[in-house]
Image (cartoon, rainbow, N blue to C red):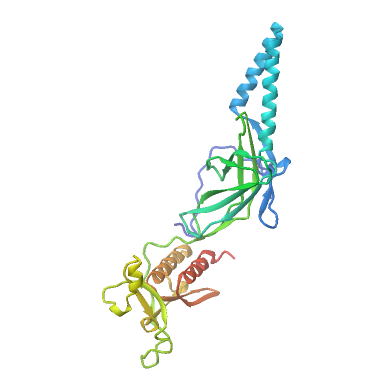
Length: 334
């Protein structure tokens, strides 16, 4: 992992540099905007259409048929030429019409760790009574199987993006293609989305030992304070755990040996502080904190998190774990 002060060396690409004042062709394409609910509706001027290789081949064949029929004054040849041309024009209209009026909405999936694939759900709504066939949702360069969309129905397609760094990963747009009904033309459109997925830091393989400290619940003379007998959670069985603390009901359900934890068992607490993590690279220090959060949660310990400008109090459970990981993911990103 490079530090923030490491020089970045770029290799010459061998391509001619683009003039500074020239806009990119991709920026000139029209995209369907999102409304307040995050839904994009495909309008007529936002659909692009071009002939496929099969369509170009058919056009060449029709041109040869037209020239030959005119040269030999073959009325039957002219009839078939114009008939096939009419079929191609109707197919072009249906290809364009298959995208008109579609409503597209994308939603972000569950948080992931950096290096894993982020999942998004793309809903395609059909407000017409007629079906729409051969709809392909594309994200980046990835293709997904075609979707058949019945009338007055919706289809949900799961798409994914690779992740490389922590923070919010946005899905700025999706592309929908179709070659329905004959494959002679390909129509496509772009729909903007507001979906995003939270990416946690990639946990380090190794991290310093957890900074264990006596729990503040212990009295001044070492006795247990108020709430010592309260149930605070469960954890996996460890050799030496008293049998009276085993959760026999969980064993009967097939969950294995689980030990109940009470207030009196919680004799330590853990404070994870970014300022106490060694290292000059911020991302490396956050990766170590991420590993410590996972270790503390896995051991069933009460832990808190301290970051510059933010302190998450002591807590337990999956919700507390996700809150701490989210704080690490968004730290320094505003």
